Image (tube, rainbow, N blue to C red; front, side):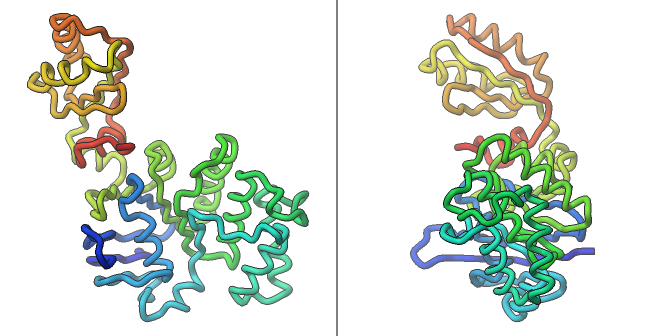
Length: 315
């Protein structure tokens, strides 16, 4: 059963050349992790901001738990938790005081809130720092406290907007494991990210966004089948200046569906990498171009994104 239903959602800003969100449609089923994957500026944060009632849509509809996000805002807010990309914390308050403030804002009864605060601090392993001012926390600790705020009130749906940006690897691992843990307890999660490995690890289904458009939605298997399940062949050249010459030489090879470049790499979408590689090496040898490293990747989200958008996710 769908807990989120989005239909022909549009958001345009005055003076903008393109719609920030351009007629997107998707559903999120109860109990799943649904990820919106795309680069900065793809429209992910705008989509979440509409769904959490922070901003209004220009047109289209969105319903959460059967409630319209425009007409039934208070009902929607009672069943969602939001973890924004920018930390929603007060540095001069302690961790415990931040949780109390946001809990009171939600109208949680004092006795219930006291128990929730202790529970959330323990869940995030912050009990020993509960009374310290947030300004003394590390970046990872602040992210964990931000997650705890989003969990107040035991929401049915949690929206996490780029929760692992600019944190250390250990804290990132903690957050990813936390997402899997709470989802395993039955909480539905809407997760936005520009890290393909996160979407690949966490998601039941993935929506790929670019320039405000939702290009494709499905499981990883469904998405790779959608683009033919191509493999990815990555080449790093000894001299970056040789990229354009080699790209021109290999673009017409049979079995090569797409050739792009990213920094010092040439990236090929191919049918069978082991069959194409000797032909590529021959072309490089004919042009006296040195290849420093070769990497073959089976179908993954990077290949899907390349095939669907014609560019690498980090472009």
